[in-house]
Length: 158
Length: 171
Image 1 (cartoon, one colour):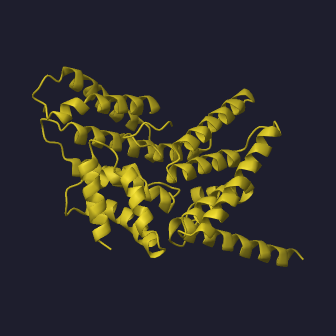
Image 2: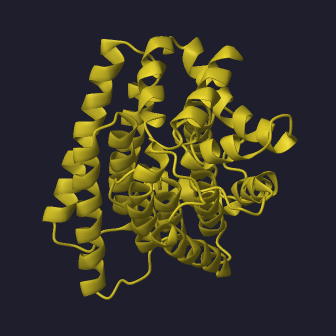
Image 3: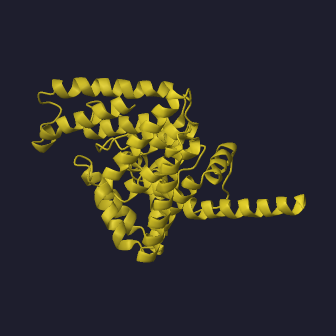
């Protein structure tokens, strides 16, 4: 029944947005504006982005091998989905860009500069591929998040 | 922006001998101050972009430059840090707490603003909030490892270490 379906969807979305709020903002009230609504829409649309985000959440939630192990499962799932997307030879979506950038940030958080560079190189390849398909526009959050990851005191590639 | 940051990293590496031997701004510094002036100019030029992320990074770069080679005429770094704070407050999509924890923008704002100012308190508070939340989840010792990485910048190490000492003592 449409009403029940709508209610279930609403509760599911509410649960996911509450998860995001608590896991990543240590706060409530996400999303609070149209830009965050757009980001949330992107988040729930791309499984690789969900997996990459959960990998970071699990890894840094509690210093326990169980959480580290669960993080690796999510990280590998994200990686496999992205590889599958790339091998499909279709134009990569904004969600895939978000997933790879999230994976890069996850490696930066654990100090793995080598893996950071690999993901950033991957992002560059994806963007070049999009250009070759006539997709020149990057989502507004992409360069913004990349800019926020900049540290002028180190030599990490950006 | 990537090109400016690349030049900034190169320039900061080039000033290390001057810093090591404490050759201050009165020494032979043409090879330091000319690229410094160009970097300041190029960093300010980024602020033509209205994007708050670009504005924030432009101001963060300028703060790094001022802290790395203090100008002969005093500059109000607290005011510049306050502008950085306004830029970061306008971000439409809030960065996650882990970005705050490792945010160079927040750290540079905290070490640039004068002690006792609301501006400084804002920057320190943003980082402290995440550190406290993670400590409560048992990350005490592992945060020290992160801290060592975040304070590895040679020229800003004393200020960054003092900042993290202050953050840790607040809990």
